[in-house]
Length: 469
Ligand SMILES: Cc1cc2nc3c(=O)[nH]c(=O)nc-3n(C[C@H](O)[C@H](O)[C@H](O)COP(=O)(O)OP(=O)(O)OC[C@H]3O[C@@H](n4cnc5c(N)ncnc54)[C@H](O)[C@@H]3O)c2cc1C
Image (cartoon, rainbow, N blue to C red):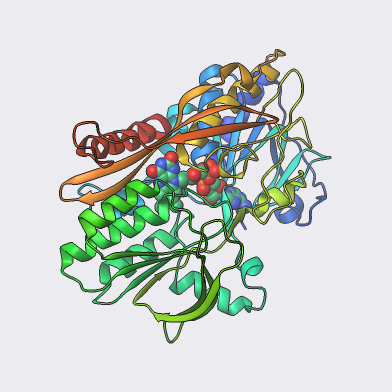
């Protein structure tokens, strides 16, 4: 694959300028990779002080903050997509909230590069050689002094449905997109929702750690709002693998009062199979008499759907496995973070002092959200900047931190209303822990308010302004 002229300008231009300041030189010659794939044509593109894999919420924040701290730092992001698409507020687009559409969710990286002065290579990471300190990509190898892993999540269809063929999984991705990963899946779900006729919409909620726990429930609210506006008959059925609902009391209040029975939440539903041609889902629902019961009554059920937002089990993006850093043993494979008496909590990985991680992949006890990625990205940048300046910084010095994660969910469109959760972060053993609270409006006694809907819009605008313009 050839490197486009634009890639070269972005990447080599910044490299050359930074190399002059920092003494980084362009490496030549190919290196093998410890983890499989070798760089395209075996060539090296250059070397940078800090290389960040992933131009999403976490990666862009680390890059921006590092350049803010010291404009002389030589920073390069490797990102596979040529534009940024926001998952936050994508449900508002589905709900027809004024001012939100696929355009307002999409941002061009050129603007961010011009504003902040880091480099960006548009390429797919295919391997990481930690011994040689080289990231292999579809366009060539990139050397680093410090590497930041910010690749976000992937879906674990294979782990959840070991007997499904690759063709069936590909079909699931196409006709029942999860829409938790930025890009084409959001475009596909948008088309399906906007073109739907009467019939039921089914949304699955996976067990285990998954991106943005309130997102499937907000999506149910927003799709129900769309159906109400368009006069479509049918229900939004949530098949939840557990009984957990993030911001549960607040969503239930909104479903009862705004959607009036149109949103149906079913707990403890394990999907056993899907017939994508007949548009039928078979699942086993377990009903427990008492919430502390271990054994429940199991019933197998089959339902038909018009639109299916099939959110499978989540896991760390395969870039984490490519890096070979230690992860937790659960299905998600969270990155194990470093901990020492001097730095009890950190965004450095436990396996390699030159490799850091931010965003949804971290092994901290904090919610996988865009706002957590922003907070983490700022702290990670401080840690790296101190190392590059020969100093020491402990993230524990910033903790406890009130409102480290503030996450809104749009629940109504007429009037526009949101609910929110507020998380405080603190040191919790070797990791960063969190404690959340969902506030109620004192005057109305309701969780949802028009003020929170405005705050939701303002939060998104502020975040995008910070990252891009
Ligand atoms: C519907 C929905 C609503 C949400 N609402 C909110 C909200 O209201 N508030 C909030 O705080 N959070 C929200 N979130 C969560 C938020 O989107 C994520 O937590 C956040 O995106 C995580 O940031 P990240 O940097 O870890 O990953 P991402 O933002 O996904 O970035 C990862 C980047 O890595 C790139 N990448 C992956 N693999 C490779 C590779 N091999 N080579 C090169 N590049 C690669 C990807 O293309 C991507 O750009 C929502 C999520 C969803 C799905």
